[in-house]
Length: 284
Figure 1 (cartoon, rainbow, N blue to C red):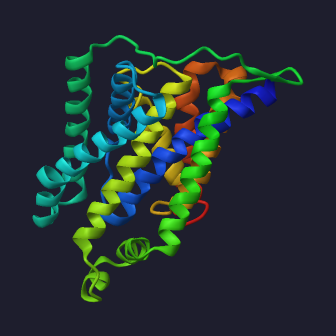
Figure 2 (cartoon, rainbow, N blue to C red; figure 1 turned 120 degrees about the horizontal axis):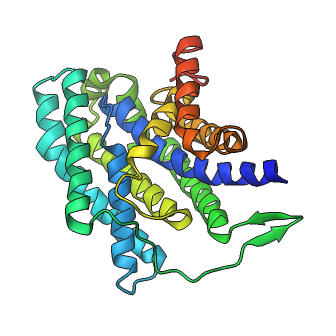
């Protein structure tokens, strides 16, 4: 029973990692940016959801408002930071350092505005569903269902829309896409919009199953990178699979190593994959 319980919890946590990892792998594959501030944008999404929800707004509407706020912040960072750096053809090391600086700025901004205390959504307490001795928390079920809906919507956008096809073309070869008449800047902006929505959604859903705290995104950034390394950098479907695998592996490891070693499990998986198959299980 304990293994089944851990497996279900792992799917819920893995769903959140998968959502956030998709946004991270899109920025890596299309913008060639290893964004270490990605986890802190997830935290921003969670805090915006909490802020709106604790002012009497429905939790689902709060997540929508939080997504809009996260989109605005990501587009501001694009215009002030990433676009000028791309225009200067800055190298990857400079971009990584800048993203770490942005992560610190966001985290300390959260601490300055809302403090370091844990926060919780204003939600009714619902009893867990008992199925054969396995306690299935209601909000974890919601997390899994909403993640599936988001994945289906993303698949439709990437495969069946003009902008989705343009995104795949830019990811394959940005110069060829530009000379083919694709509006690369429009693709970049749309990539940030999708990334922001998925990231804010991940943060909002994470707040459903745990407390909202300033460093929550920072502790998820390593599992996110482990997920995209496992699934293949630039491959959104691989990031989804990788996120689920990392989440399940972390939860299944708790009875053996304790919860404090969850990050170590993600790190070990990432190292092994990079050593054995650097292109990831599913490749790019």
